[in-house]
Amino acid sequence: MILSCQNITKAFDGKTILKQANFHIEEHEKAAIIGINGAGKTTLLNIITGRLQPDEGVVSISKGKTIGYLEQNPILDSENTIFDELMSVKDYLLQMERKIRQMEHDMKHREGSALEALMEQYARLTTRFEMENGYAYKSELTGVLKGLGFEEAEYEKPVCTLSGGQKTRVALGKLLLLSPDIILLDEPTNHLDMNAIRWLEGYLSAYKGAVLIVSHDRYFLDRIAMKIIEIDAGTVMTFAGNYSAYAQKKEQYRTAKMHAYLNQQREIKHQQEVIDKLKSFNREKSIKRAESREKMLAKIEVLEKPTEVRTDMNIRLIPNITSGKDVLDIENLSKAFDKEVLFRKISFSLKRGEHVAIIGDNGTGKTTLLKLINELLAADEGTIRLGTNVHIGYYDQEHHVLHTEKSIYDEISDEYPTLTTTEIRNILAAFLFTGDDVFKLVGECSGGERGRISLAKLMLSEANFLILDEPTNHLDIASKEILEDALNEYEGTILYVSHDRYFINKTAHRILELNEQTLTGYLGNYDYYLEKKTEQSIVPQQKNPDTPVISSAKADWQAKKAAQAKQRKLENDLKKTETRIAQLEENISDLDTLMASDEVCRNSAKLGELSAEQGKLQEELDSLYEVWEELSEMV
Image (cartoon, rainbow, N blue to C red):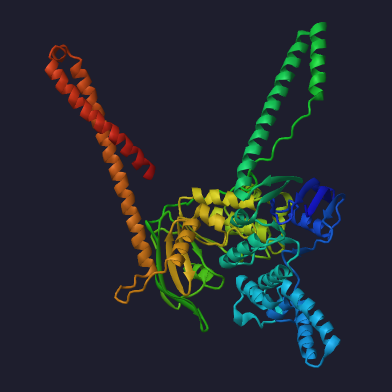
């Protein structure tokens, strides 16, 4: 055991955040802390690192073990370049290397015992240098930089000129290179693209030390975590396994607790009814029996009602009208800023009811593409056509559609003036804004609060075509699941940009990957996309100069048409099979009736003939039952 938390309790302003929290981390274990926003996850990390003192309890770290912590928004204003900032972690190796070079120089001028003594020192130092990975530290450093998404051209950028997200990546790189015995990470995937997240998954999985992560990225937790530490209403519980295993066990646990609670409540109600009935008899014996039952009832330890699952936000997305079958058609669209080309001559289309995710590395133009569709930017070339009766609802990850100078209440009332005060308050309450919270200025709201305001406006828009830019940013896991349910029940069309792979898996019917200025389509969710990408990397496509190049949009359209044709054929085959089964069952029933008649019963030859015919029909029917079963599963 490398880390132990015993009876950790912490309160702020009289509100208990953590109460009697107990858990431990073994050496080399990878664990995750989860909970809704405000549950106390970061508070717990700060207690473990000693930045905060618990009101009660003890944090124990094994003697001699080092701990490293990446907070959400690390302060990093160094004048160093990115490369030098990471190299500073290996400064002790640079000093050793300089000393080794000096020793090599000095050996040329030593003789006898002095040379022997120097050679012994040299052997010890080079052995230590090798054990510290001294001969490969530069390749290790560049591997981390590339893994975290830094291009070689960026290595010489001063850290102080970087964005907040880039600084977080630099801080993460430094922490990984330090290789402490325990790594604490607070939302490490927030500023990483998919490739960088996949790289980090591999790095942490192979990491020799222990890792404790706070994250809302469920796909990441499924790949990394061996243990889930949940904070729920101040109570800490530990579950073995990854996030998916936790979700299943948590539901079973909650169901069991709810059954126990409801059973106890029924028993209490029953006992109270018996007590009331005994008292109503108004006899000495019955009153004594009632009093006896009351004493027993008072001794019962009443169970707390379990926390309801995902009852915080209430999102209902309902289009006001149905759009035409063709929702969006984009042809030969190109966009560049200055000399930087984002994409060139991309084409794709959307049909009514499709849920399509756009993925790609940071900077490939995903958000720009959404802005072009929303006419917030102008294309350099190409056409964007919306279908009949298409009404767009836009969710902007930067929330530019919100007005920072307005209150939350006015943000809704100004946009929808026909709503009454009660209706506005009810809508805002569904997104967790109650009481005086509704008069808070939008500019003073956190990223999560602005996300909830944008979702409220999106719900009120009654749009039939939702365009969403990173809709899960700043949402906790429970809120993400509520949004997933709302989108899956939505009958309109959805086009969204997201790096949340779990979210994409749950909601996407199709994926468009924007990469190297082109768009490639994949039918299916993220796992299917990953499977296809893996196949492509294992079996490279051979290029034949005589083979015509099919555009990604056309290939996507052809694949979709082929899938639809296959589905129609299956449905037709199933219908034909059902019709034939019904006919055979009727024919067999008619033969039963005929063979039971007096005329046939007395004619053994006829009876044998009909029986043979019935046998053939029964044999065909049995075979068709199997065919029907296979077809129904495929459909």
